[in-house]
Amino acid sequence: MAVVEGGSFAAAANKLDISRAMVSKQIQKLEEHLGTRLMNRTTRRLSLTETGRAFYERSTQIISDVEEAEQIAGQMTRTPQGVLRVTIPLSYGQHRLAAIIGAYTQAYPQVQLDISLSDRKVDLVDEGFDLAIRIGAMPQSDMIARKIGGVHSIVCAAPAYLARHGAPQTPAELAQHACLGYTLTGSGAEWRMEGPQGPATVAIAGPIRADNGDIIRLAAQSGAGIIFQPHFIVGEDIDAGRLVRLLPEWQSAELGVYAVYPSRKHLSAKVRTFVDFMVAALAV
Image (cartoon, rainbow, N blue to C red; front, side, top):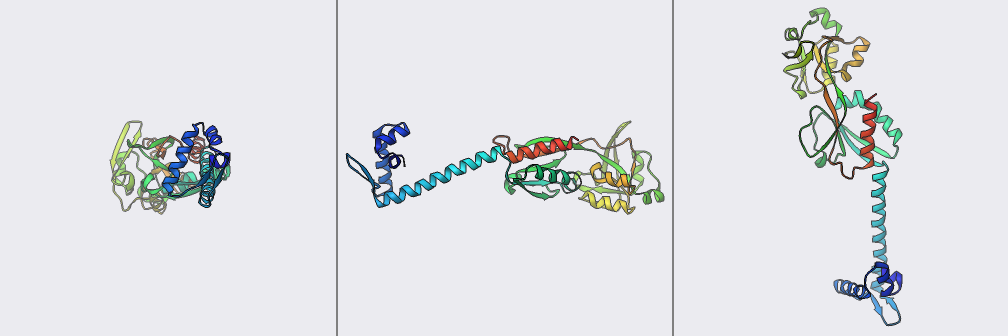
């Protein structure tokens, strides 16, 4: 391309900052590789063969495509755009992040969010996700985990249940009540909480265990038993009187909420801005 556009080996050598002999050698090697002559050379001028013209035109298009690809990649690093695939725990996404996600798309309209709501711990790389929101202690791994918030679980029950069975006054009394367990955090069999007397662990039993917090929240509303769930799940029900908080001085230890992504190196603008947006919104 440099030879054709410059009109001579000397012009190409000057453009590429190499010797004229090196230009001649590279052209010769290219022709040997292709098994055809690309240009006719005399002491006065160069002219392309038919094959050389076709090869030059295709090469020009390839280089143009590569330059465009580099520009797009660079722009995506600087400007949030494209599809952002995010996996989020089901209830947390519904109760805590839905409005924040909507606000993000308004702030960054060139980003299209592809969201998977699931309590399953997905493999980000194998399943093609850019980012995960996860709750709980982060195990050692090659992933980057940035804390964006925290949650506490609290004890509550419906007024109908309390009217029939009364309210426990201490964590130990929970063992005498119907308690609905959440199995994904191991709280299907025991509840661990902290209060004025320090930590307490209570073995619980009841008619329902589930791997989704909203299922047992709705069951608790019907009077089926007592639940120990994050405030983001039960807060609106408590405010509306559908549930009543019990043992108000007791709650779980804080569980961190983390944004998890594969690498900090060459982090795309869409991932960076999404995480920063979550941090700012959840801090309010």
